Length: 95
Image (cartoon, rainbow, N blue to C red; front, top):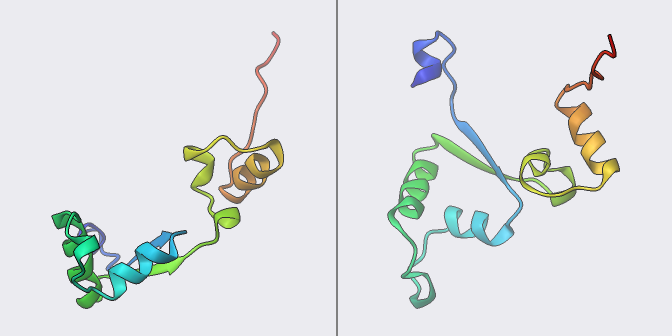
């Protein structure tokens, strides 16, 4: 709704994750004894998927740019994700 108000309507919101199980459960809502603990948020996501306001996509863990903000990465992965986000490092001036 925000994008529509800004004059940039979108057909759906892409939601990316690296859990095959979570994506499967969201796209195939089933009632199982093991899933009774799931909160209302899960049912809301399933409803939005059925309405096609949200689409789920799998992103392998090594391609997940958001890992930069949530995990301790090695220097190579950190620098790769940083450049993919378009972030640059400017050293402090010594003046």
